[in-house]
Length: 229
Image (tube, rainbow, N blue to C red; front, side, top):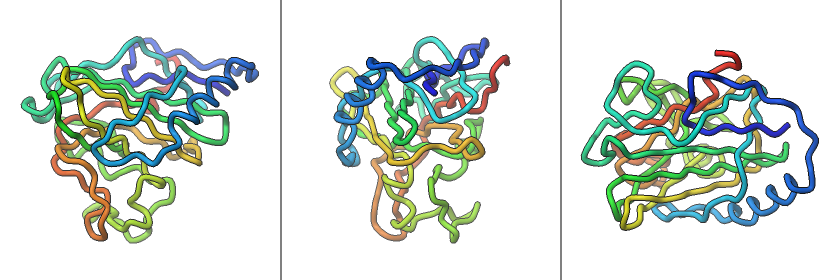
């Protein structure tokens, strides 16, 4: 099943249609795999994954174009918590693609601070007025020692292979693209709800693994929206 899931969600949600995998789809997935296989280095922009987006989620939502960051208001798709680091008017878009076994994720941003490094992770909760609303990182294998008050910082679980990290450094215009391949799929009952931008790149040492400084922006992901809303 191939589904288009841009992060900027319009008011009209479109239900995905099952489709047979075509030769073009296979070629697109192969190209994306080549672009995304390398382990991302925190603070370094990965090459863009080719093709359009899809997902393992059974209910799909479609939108048009990137989401625009703004200060908090109900219904905002992209929120800035620090206008010095994520200026209002900056944009972000997340895309997913999959062949049914592996997952590719692509993040594209524009209008951020030029030449600056950011952390970027998928989180379990949605964006809210309070940056803490997004909750902890999404994990494919949940850290049994993690709690709401003490999120996972164990490198066995808080790592780029078990979570989705898309750290990047912007170019001279404040734009960047980061991509990542994961050798697993989202399950329908466990889907990330937001992509959070952080003020620092992601740490990997025991006790601080997965941390990346203050939450400076939040992008709603389309999984929280059902078809027909």
